[in-house]
Image 1 (tube, helix red, strand yellow):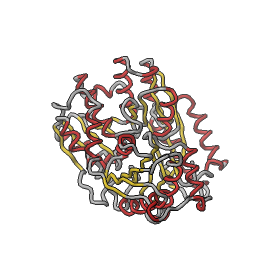
Image 2 (cartoon, rainbow, N blue to C red):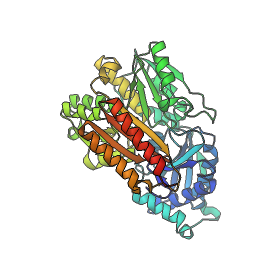
Image 3 (tube, one colour):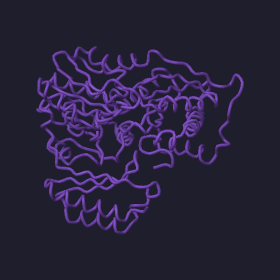
Image 4 (cartoon, one colour):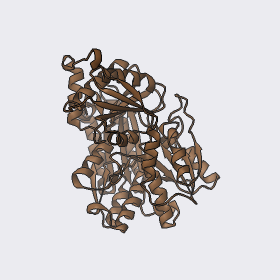
Length: 450
């Protein structure tokens, strides 16, 4: 993990950690690195989510981009995957999304995309970091008529919606859907998308005010949607996160259908159609053991990556695979998109229900979910990258792994987006894995560097 960029861009508390000055510097350095080999006046598109700090950071970022001679086209409030799609459609040289995704309102982030709509490699992010932190004098500023211009797109949400609608062959008529927009980016697109596809919809948490993004709603807080679906007899509920690159679902009984279950549904659907490339799906180390049991039972190969949809995508591109994702709801359909896309995932899932003429609970039953415990432990900035060297912590993790053996799986990792250590254990016996997770968490709290 780099000095500025984690697994999903640069992120921190807006204004105090992710400062206006840093946003401007990222704009300058990213524009220099990503447009270095162009033979024309560069253009970079910029989108944002609905949080109150996005406007401020947008202004600083765009000032930095223009200061080195690149033009900016501002897209307004759009989902992250819209930026990934539109950077190619608009023939831009790079794309930027201002969002902290699923994080609460005080955070914000900056995600960068290449001209191909791909998240940047670690090497390119390191090059940008070096310019900002080590060689700021190597950033050439422009003046006079060489300064970049800012323009505003009025068509971005509609262009993105039209693209999504073309990814399914049928409409969504006859399906009753509850949609939770998390008071985030999906609020700008979901209503036109789902109603345009003929669905019978109700929308909740689609009135952003700058302060309510992800607040007790969306894919990280599913209780309200689950109750809403069950009480009102919807066929399905779908929930997005703040920038709508994730989707989780609720079945007709109010039960959660997570990213692992959706991966199983999509992989089986593609295999049945003869469209599962290399008979393989891609998942991460956080995927539930139930997904691996599903793959084994259905004779589907599974490739495993580190956490982060960028690493899933890298594996998919390298191996030529067309479906992959994360338990958290980042699902990548490489036949249609270059990044996780919550709304694309939602309409593909609903289309699968309609094509199979099955309830969501029936489709999801092909993948068992093993009991899983997740404990998040907040750590200081100083502890990042150092905690795993502590002997007591290493011993606690090793002891639990040895005692649990093949009956469970232990994974302890540092978050790439928040100052947290995540202790995850899964297995068939809840009480056993809970005991071990609590024990490891206690040791981390006691011995983590302060």
